[in-house]
Image 1 (cartoon, one colour):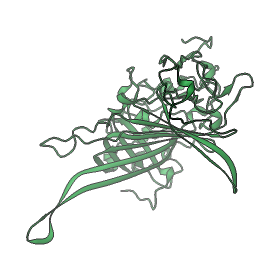
Image 2 (image 1 turned 90 degrees about the horizontal axis):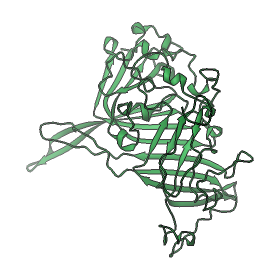
Image 3 (image 1 turned 135 degrees about the vertical axis):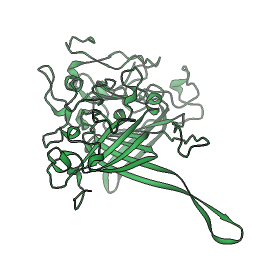
Image 4 (image 1 turned 90 degrees about the vertical axis):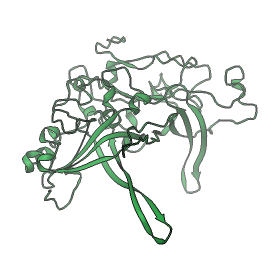
Length: 425
């Protein structure tokens, strides 16, 4: 047992590995940049009564539910969402459907509070003194926040049915897992390149690290661009400044999992995501002239000669890259569900427009190297070589410049361009 008088952030470490590898000492998956972790265990009780007595006949305990919620800053290290679905690594699958099937094991290690960092802990031979291990966890919900004030963050909720508390020799988080948490750890994207060709890419991602020049934003946002443009990104290529004043972007989805049960077994044999899965994106921008989104019974006249004739809205593309090599891809079938004009009241502040978009089943978060087994943590204690070599500045990345917005072109994206000649490879 731990001799701590309290638990604080400096004596905790989180590890996420593939399902079934929590006790494998060769499986590394330490999560960096974690801001908080919360864990809730619920015991589902069902009451039975009978004629003849007011007292309860039996209080039947069902399957326990474990819910773990984590939040981390976006810092160039692997995202929680990707680490919790490493079963897709080594394949071309990386979308919502593929990742919804994957399971993971999560461990929270608690070290001695008297040490400045967990790497310097000496109790229990340098291993965690206490570990809580949750196995067979599914991704339940994912959300990303890109604010104008503060850090870009990721929040992930995992759900499962198994939790163990381990101590001393039974713990799986060893000193090898926390080697980098030695007081010198810093955001992976902060480093000034891993070789002479790479420059720094912002550290913890903030508003200046949103690459509006490469982004594809919905045209229904006022001043994004004319209806005849192939794509819109709200960026003036001449002055190299944004043409719209975006304040916040939030992206979220919830898998709404169901328990699939069978006779002869208490726990679910599978907890599939409840498709179709709705994906939401809210974009808030300071208003300069209004939202200019009209609503009419006959629809938008500008859409009369298109497949959306008679509608007020059309399908739109959302693709947002960050400087550290992370891209949020919501596909080309996002639909404006609402727009809100508010703020600028007598107490001060600015009027802003909040545009809310939804799509179904189209949500792909990619990170340079996200499908590499060495990046996503399947072995080794040092920083994986592929992650060290990833191009953290976008001079070494070749984004596709010509987007076929109308035809829902899916061949866009980023490809590594190490020789910086404008072509991949």
